[in-house]
Length: 246
Image 1 (cartoon, rainbow, N blue to C red):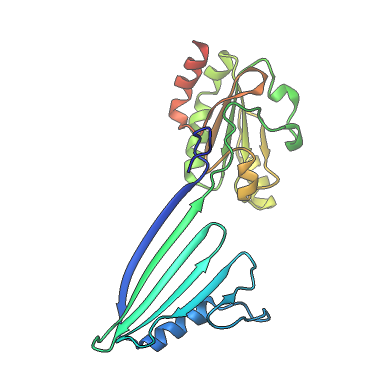
Image 2 (cartoon, one colour):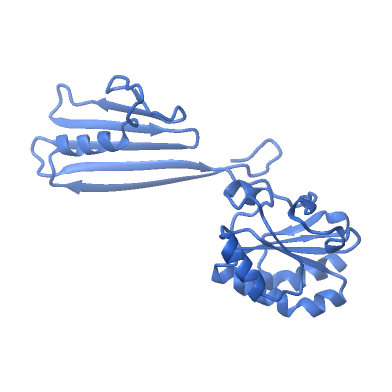
């Protein structure tokens, strides 16, 4: 999906599956209606139009079998971002119950920081001298307990000397969920040549503030902390720096 400026704002995905079972259709219908019914304590509506306890979700179950040689039950589950349809059917002459499932979901990517200013790092306990405004800054967000992040951190550490010679500042942000004890132990074991801080919010919302969709995540900011490149592999850092120099 694109906005009026042509920028991609959402990505939609549709998946579907079909399966059969020897179970009678009544048992299959009962299974899914029980699985999808509102939580205990909510106000149940009629079986044909039932609202879930979560007001953002609506469930509709409709029988379309009357006067037909096939039993059909259609179950719809809708939220703001998803739509799921189950069609359960079985003809009088069939020996199996047929289930068709279609799921549609809209994913909204976090706002990119490309072309924007870096978030305030002072709130993370970093000093202004750690990210001088007159130098390029590399920001590496990691989950120290995951191998891909540790590898990216190792590659960046190997380049520490060369980056310093080029006048490039580097900060590392621990952005994955980690206990206080594990973080303290990791900090003692890790002798990094860069300033390091820890995100206070490591949820999806916290990562979104840095435009991160996965970890590790790299940001490259130019002078005045304006972001020039986001989400690129660590192997492309040297090339990105050369682009900025030209």
